[in-house]
Length: 169
Image (cartoon, rainbow, N blue to C red; front, top):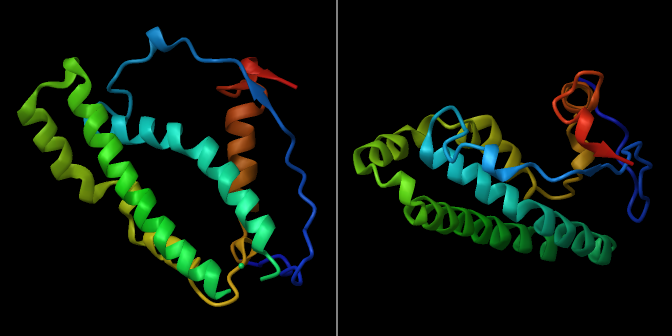
C-alpha cells in the first residue's frame, strides 16, 4: 500500500470531497433493531450517529487551531477524548437501549452484550488504528483511505447508491 506524501507542518492538503446535503430519513420506517437484528449494536450505531456530526466539527476546529503547536497537547488530548468518547458511547447506548420500551427483552439484551466482543468496532485492526493517533508525528494521511473512499462514494452516492436519491447539492 502506498501512502500519500505527508504534508509539512502548517500545510493543508487539498481534498476533493464535495459537500452533500441529505434529506432526513423518515424515522417511522426504521426498525429500532436495524443493525443485523442486534439491539445493543443498533443503539450503539444510533448513538454514534448522534455524536459524530458535532464531534467531528469540534475535532476539525480543534486541530485547525492547534496544528502548529497540536504534539504533547495533541497526544494528551487524544487520550482524554478517546476515554471520554468511549464512556459517552457506553452511557448513551445503555440509556438508549434501556429507555426503549420495545427492547425490554432482558435475555435478548444480555445475548447482545455478550456478542459485543465480536463487533467490528472492537476488531484489533480498529483498536490499533485508533491507538496510532497517539504516536508522535501522527498525521491522518499516514493511512491511505483512497480505496475505501471510492468504494463508499460509489455505494452511497453513485448511480443506484443507497443515498443517491436523497442528495441535494
